[in-house]
Structures are given as C-alpha cells and as structure tokens.
Length: 329
Length: 255
Image (cartoon, rainbow over all chains, first blue to last red; front, top):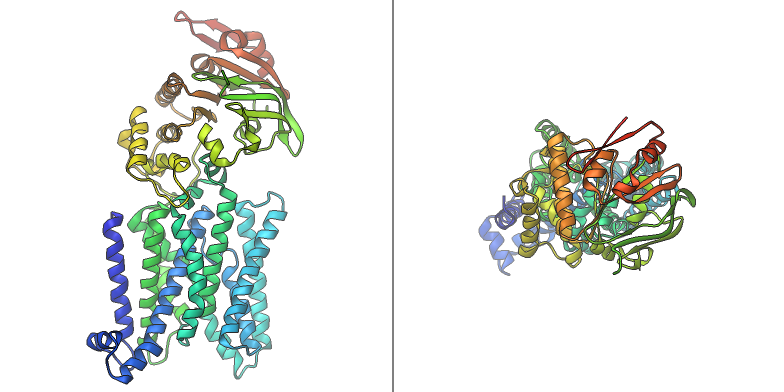
C-alpha cells in the first residue's frame, strides 16, 4: 500500500483504539462524555476517571507499544536479522534487573524507573564493550552472543532479587511487574518516560532512510557513503533508551518488538523509512488494544506480558509459515 | 591528466603483515583493469584496501590525486563505487530501492530520495536494460539479475571509478555476456573499472589491462596482450597454460 494512504489509515486506527481504551472500564465513558471532558466540560467523576486513570493508561500503553515496536524494527535493520528484538542485547533483562532491584530496596516509582533505565543502558554498554574487545571486534554475531550472555547474567540477578525479596509484600509485586503490566500507570509515569522515548525515537525517524542502508551490511553501506559503524552505534543507543524507558514503565512485555515490525512489513515492504512510521503506529495501537483487553476480559487483570505472548507466539508462527515475504529464507 | 585510481608503493595485508606488495597502479578514464591470481593471492585484501575498508600496510591509494586514507566515507563514495560479488541482506528490498541507495551521497542526512533520485535510478536501470525489474523483490531475482541491479546502483551513484569483485562468478553463460557488456558500457562512458576474475579468457575480452598477482607480489602489469603470456600465466597458476590467438583478434587460454 502506498505510504500516503497507509499512514492516515493507521493513524485513524490508532485514534479509534485509543478512544475505545478510554471508554472501556469499570466506569464506562460514552463518546459524548469523553468529548465533553476533553473540551473542558463534563461531570467531575468522568473528568477524574478520564484524566487520572484512563488517559494516562492508554497513553502509557501507546508509548510503550510505539517504543518497543520502533526499537525492534531498528534492531532488526541494524543487526541485519529479522529475528532479533529488544531482548537480543539483554536490554529487557538488564532494565528488568534494575527495576526489580528498585522494588526490593523499596524505592519510589520514579527512582525504580531510573534504576531500570540505568541498568538497561549499562547492559548495552557492557555488551558493546565486550563485543568490541573480543576477537572480530564489533561483529554482529559476536555482539548478539554477548547480548545473550549478559542477558542471562541479568536474568540470574533477577532470580537473586526474587530470592531475597520479602515473600509477603515484595515478591508478588516483583512477579507481577515482571509479567508486564500497566495497572499502576499514572500521569507522572507517562511524563517521566516521554522524554526518553521521544529522544530515542526522533533520531531514528529523522535518519530513517539512511538507517535502511545498514541492512546491506557495514562494508556495503560504507561504500555508499555512510559512516556505518557510527550510525549503528547511534541506533543501538536510541533503541536501548526507548526499550529501557518502556520496560521501566510497563515491566517486561515481550513479543511486541519482534512481532509488530513483521506485521508492519507486510503492509509497507522492507524499506526502513516506510516501515518505521508504520511500526510505530501499529505498535501503539496493538499495545493499547492488548492492554484494554488485559483489564477487561476477566474479573482480575491479566498481566500484559501473558497476553502479548499468547497473541504473539501464534502470530509469529503464522508469519513464519506464511513464508518469507519481507525477508529472505 | 590525474589518474582516477592510483597506488604508490602499496603493500596490503592484515595487522601490519603484508600479503601482497609492490603494487603501483594507475587507472585512467574508460580503462578496464582485470586482476588475476590464484586463490589466496591477496586479491580480496587488495580490493578491501582500494575501497578504504582496510588500512594499507605501506604506500598510498590515491583517488583522483588525493589520498584515500584522509577521506570521509561520503567523499570516497563520490569517487569510487563498489559492486560486491553477492548481496547479503535478509530483507526483500525492491530492485529500484536498492538502486536508489546509490543516491545516498547526494542526499542530506535527514533526506529521503525524491523524484530526481528516482528518475536517475530508473535511467540507470534503463541503460542496463533491466527497467522491467524495478518493482521486483531482490530476493526473488536470479544471480545475474542481481548483479545487473548492483551495477545499476554503481551507475546511479555516479562515481568515476568502479571496483567489481568477481562480477561474473557463479553466473550462467547468458548472464556472463550481459554483465560483460554492461562493464564495457561503463568503460565507454568514461568510467574506470577494476575487476577480479578467475577466467583469463574473460580478462582478455573485457580488459584493457591486466594485473597478475601471486606469491605475494605483482607478476605482471600492463596491456592485456603484453602481460597475459602463456609463460606468465603458467607461472601464476603453476599449471601449464597455452595461449591461442583467435581469428577475430581475441585470445583464448587452455591448459
């Protein structure tokens, strides 16, 4: 589909999903009530629900979905591998470790975000340092394997934190958070994560055509005039920033970074400059829809990570079975 | 006149250890230089050095008179294009999108290719007679078609020197002829071409000049007819080689 037709379509889809997400809940809001509150009127109860509960939550979901999908698309291009995702550099596990450590230490929410973010960045820095100092420095495969190793280390750290946590109070909180949830998303969380996500997203969006050239490999991109090593490093930093911010807000929500870029690629083809905007919009809409379902399909809220895995795994297998459209066999 | 591509006392190798030394090349507009040598002779190392992907162990590479080692990638890409032996991307770009990538040197960092770049890319594909492939996914193309797409990209890039890594290896007979014709077309437009090949007949057909490398040194450099003697090729490949003159003026080599 042409870009000029696809983007408005995806935008309209996102707005529809956002409105549905705002409307649905224990205190349902009609479209008229939503319109009234948004234009400054409405009754005080509707206004409280909308401003303090629903809107922060759907916006948090949209941000997390957009960030994870964009990070996934960027990693896939930068590593020339359609099967990588934000987990590949150990980023998710690293950020997760910092956040559960924050919960263990009883830190306030903002500080938990910061520790998650710091360990996410530290993880990727360690992975880059290791892969550049090993033989064959900076090779993609070496980097991915270092990511797996460091990610496993972070996973061990998470297990240790769970072992040390108070089983009455902290352990349930940690476990629930690790499963991925936006149940506690507040306006402050959205505002805290927004700058990091935008700071990661903006360079990717601006440089999106050049980034696509990295799919050819470093040497070929260099011969086309691209400072490939520098550009790839920048992509990794940006994508990590977004992933860490998303993980600190929503916990470990898997599959989005892997699945959404593939879904978007079916619509746009392989060009990264066309893929990225579509992945951002699709990721945001998908996450809002998944989160709305997570909090409304059962009496107790279903952790988001469970839902995304239940949807993501079959969709991914379907994509594999459907053949290699968008990427070679 | 300043040569498009020149090397002075060039030694190439890895980590300061030379594998091939004493390379003094000079290539002008419209010339095709064929690089011949047995496997492991350092052809790939020489190419990577000429492309600025590997630092020279000693000596200089000059592009249009200026040292390559001092140039940023964007400048090198203006002067020198590379046609890799094969394409290694897992993503199914359209052929036109791949050719468009040759426009990177003419676009600002935040820009995307527009009508002017698309026109230029389409023209390059038309020149090579592959305009019909524009919308095809490259992962579905044959080896020969992909090679033509990569040559079209070099044409769209507009560099005056093109380096080709075994451009006809693994191609069938018809595609070898097509790619060979495309290389001569490039030269006729004033492009300097340096290519590696394992086929002496092809070097004799396509090349104006030949560079023979083996055992760490240059065993011959000059016009094809003068350089590619039976004795030199026998010494180069360490098997007896006979040379025959063809009636049309060409050369044929056999064991």
